[in-house]
Length: 463
Image (cartoon, rainbow, N blue to C red; front, side, top):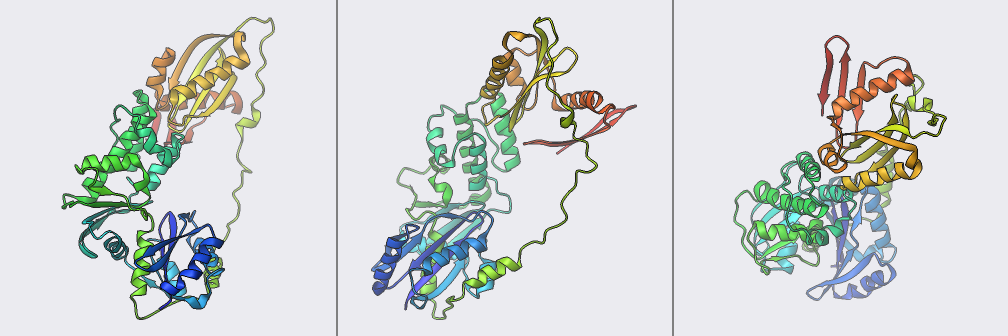
């Protein structure tokens, strides 16, 4: 028996585990010494090598080729006895290279049951899926997994943390500072994002919103994945989200688990790969691969053909007709009005004169901090125009309009539909010469279609 490789190819990441026999230790240690992407571990007296946690960035075939190529640069191909794959993105790899595909539940159960025989329940929250497994040793007593929706998974947490200008690694530390949690829906990522936006409007801090998001992940896992099934301690929490201390704490609270009842294995992201390598080592029929170049050939053949480029030949770009604002002669302060549009993704600040001409405009990322974004926009207007403006009024719109109206003392507060309609008609008349009949708006957090019937008013459709 030689080295057996397990590959876990998920929706987000790729992991490799290589399990050898005792006399393979030297070559595997040489691999780790030559390649910092690999590190040594052990199973009984057998050497075990784990790759780094590698994001596939939408290219599972190329990422798998690169990882295997790095492995084979140090390890001779004839030392590899077999390779087996698992994970949601592995079926194509298995088909191209003629490898065994292993069930994810079986792979996880074999690894956890071997390394942590005391564990009775496994929670996995990965990049785009979640799993519940009840174990007796390496045997599966019960199991379930999430559906197609990515709510409550790592990818959603990544997106929302980045939107608030935090890396996912920082979330646990930030959540620990929150005095309370905003109430966030967990069953749907769209509703969760809407709740986060509403929480911003109500003045919740980023830490309180992120804590609410972690609580929502735990509630969703309990209601949608576990569904009332037994949760017997000790519980192993695996998958990338296990490194989020906010979610770990929320799961402890949701399932009433003590400090010693929930453990996070050191190999939290490599369970599927390790279990697959163990199962391959026990398989009498072997399928190794000596021609990994077939992956590159397949990847090239599968490239999507380019289509003809889109054309803007018949599109009128009104922005090309915008000129620099010319202040009236005389030196008197300009009567100005401020418009503040606070969205979930961006914040826009504009100063116009009494005729509707734009004096200055600012586009900023809201980044989960609407008040700070508005302060930054207003500071820019003040820095550039200062005493040249006499502010006569202010209005707000967007998802954060109520909060910012209180903050700046706005005179008017309008919904986005009214503001878009009024602004689009004004701009089309002043720059295009005639009013528009149809408006398509695609923003960072919403889209809408407006049709203007000049006799009956507006027909509006929202996403």
